[in-house]
Image (tube, rainbow, N blue to C red; front, side, top):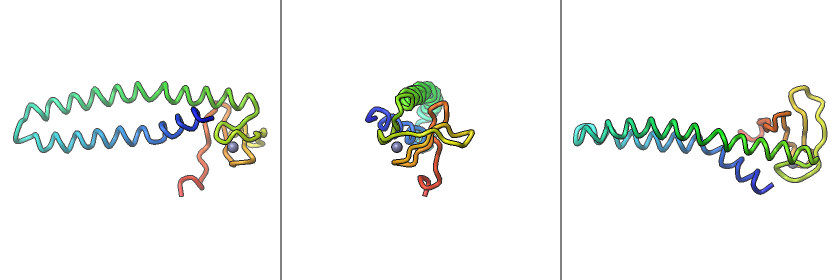
Length: 118
Ligand SMILES: [Zn+2]
C-alpha cells in the first residue's frame, strides 16, 4: 500500500515537474542567447534529450503502479487504503472501494473522481 501510494504521488507530479524543469532551462537559455549563444544551443539539445529520457523513465513507473494495483485488487483489497473492495456495476469501472470511494478499471488504473480535482 505504501509503495502504491508513493508511486501514485510520484506519477501524479512527474509530468508537471519535468515540464517546469524544462521551462526553467528555457528561461536560462533565453538569458544565454546574447551572452553565450553556444549555451543556448547546448541547453536546447540537452532539453530534448532530457525530455526523451523523462518520457522513457515515466512509462515503467506507471506500469509498476498498475501492476501493484492489479495484484492488490486481486487480493480483494483497495490499493489506496487497504479497505475491502467490491465489484462495481459500471462497465468501465470494475472495482470500487466503500471506504475511500476510489474506483478502479480492470487495467488497475484509478478513475479520477471529480472531488479530487476540486
Ligand atoms: Zn479504498
